Length: 387
Image 1 (cartoon, rainbow, N blue to C red):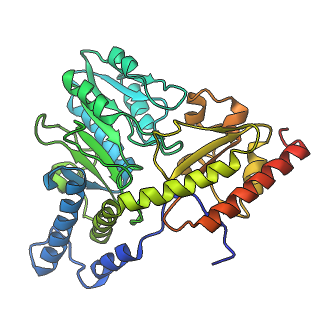
Image 2 (tube, rainbow, N blue to C red; image 1 turned 135 degrees about the vertical axis):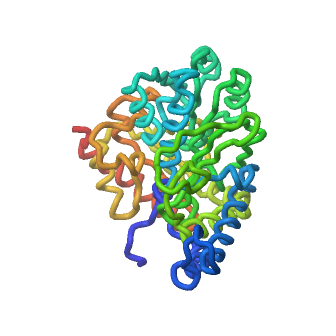
Image 3 (spheres, rainbow, N blue to C red; image 1 turned 90 degrees about the vertical axis):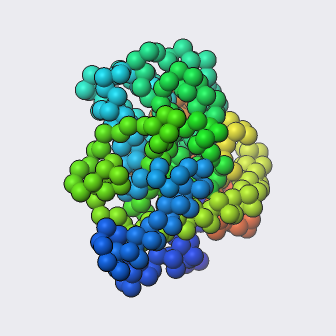
């Protein structure tokens, strides 16, 4: 295990916390009943699912009935965007989103555009934050949804959720946020922030893969959704399919732990991130991507001038496991759409590194990573690796 690279890709996914795994295990073997079944085995599963639903709802100041379990944030985003588009088709066919969104938001919007919807994609400022005046100008009488992610998965910046929510509420427009990278890292309150739909996932916070949730507001206003998956009427008819009980239990436990340890862990990862940045920023031609302070503590995204991006990653990977962007697009050859939206040149966008710091990283590892990063960049520049 000690010979493996240092893991610094916690934005892509996280290992399951042992406490989460312990909570899940009985529901694979002993308490294996289908929560929909009307007998003791089903009741056991149903009670555990109910408890997990309550934990997740409490974490975002929602009610348990407003939590709809899905297979992850991608499905939750699809259900929110396509579900609103279909349900509110008679009211309007205009949706607003942002250029730096995850493809799990941009692609459903593009799909609706192929059906005749008009999609406005807002640009961001150089720090990755949207311009609220531009959002206000983009709102129209036929706008039915605004979708803006809470924390960017590549550059870690925080969007002004409360201000967006207030603007949408004032204009009677639904507000959806992809909060896959946010829960357990920042405080989320769907009431104060006036959020109508929120996508969540477990595997970014040391929970299992394959489970997520969509918060759907039930009052003031009650959000209508057209289901995108039919067959059985599960989850209040919004998402049919037998519930993945062990994963849901793990999701609830992961949220419980993440929220309880949020403040302490934030302080720790900020200290590690700032330590890393203070060392590698001594290099010439290194640029921080995203707002310097309005970002989650786990994230450090940098672009490096004068090196070839592929050569940089190859040089770093024997020592550390990192990425140059979203894990979902890591095999693509084009530069990150997030970094180009910030105004980075193609060369700088290609030569970018996303450090995702997590709970298993140590100061010793950060020092080792910084030293190897500096030596790799210095060596590549001497070799003239830009071409």
